[in-house]
Image (cartoon, rainbow, N blue to C red; front, side):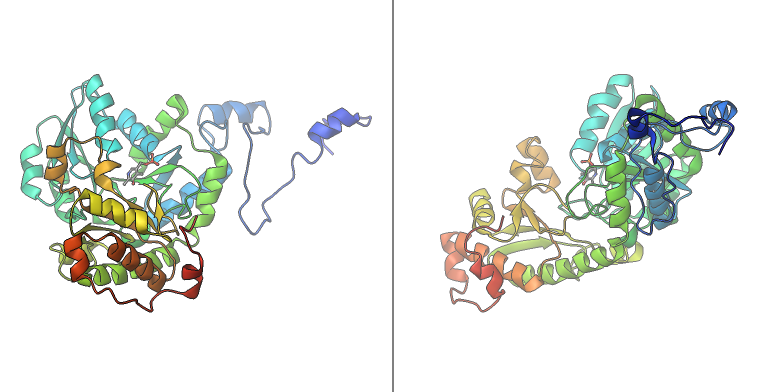
Length: 425
Ligand SMILES: *Cc1c(COP(=O)(O)O)cnc(C)c1O
């Protein structure tokens, strides 16, 4: 009973709208999903204090939500960050970092081999507002040293890149960044905080597309930025003002997904390592790109900064695009999609999809060959994945390959998969 309590009962319409409104959900064991556009203030002064930012607390859906805050807290803890800000997508995360921390006249160096939309965003939008952009090979520290100018304020890169699996030396790049007073922003989508902690190696901010391994089951879009509190202040100011906000439902999905992230990443890495080693030996396969292979040229560097090699690998099949497409079309278990980081294994032909907007010469320089395939290795039984891939590689091989490949039927794969018949959808 408060002094504001009415002295007569409310009508049904009022009760329909108001009864149970202020239930405390804090004793739920599984974290609650808070779907609300606004928040109740204790009194008029509380509203004024929270609006002015002098008192912590929720104000409005565009810039805060308790479920999203729980997700941010959990991802910050995993990244070893002072804080985190969730956004509507990975690209929204880049947008907020760029709008919050860059100004006309600034220069940014991007790592090559990044997720295609990232360089497109910087070139299409940041250059328009007077930010200049150059690109450096993530494997070559000298190129980064040469790229730095007086106006350089930010390095942005992915490591490892995909599907070529080039590794950036994060310790060396962060030392260079500090020496030249440049911010180091690392996209950690591929490794996730489970396999790599760029902040501990000297990065200032980490960016994620949460739609990949963080969700891990291919359901929701989202993004997050984690790192230094002073930089995050600028990022969340963009969120509040420009509004690239996350959905509370998606934050709830990500929050729950993080609970299994360590287990999933361990298993993705194990499956991918076993498949990479198997593909190396396959007569229809030319080359395999995976940092977990002993023969990967940067294996030692990867091991010095990653605690595992993740679920993504690239491989080239004997022949050309026709043969690569035939492998895709002969698979029944592995899905044909351009996403990554799902429990379900997925295959992509980069040259005609994710890297299709590049010119042929750009593709050649980036190593995106017509016979290259990208495989996001899921959590199915690895023997079933081998069975599916082996069947596809045999079915698809060019005439020359077909004679090289042992045609004898193999006893791999479970009865269940074989019983499925056509493509598993
Ligand atoms: C998918 C992806 C992005 C973009 O994130 P969206 O959530 O799709 O906006 C950025 N970086 C990497 C490495 C990605 O895989």
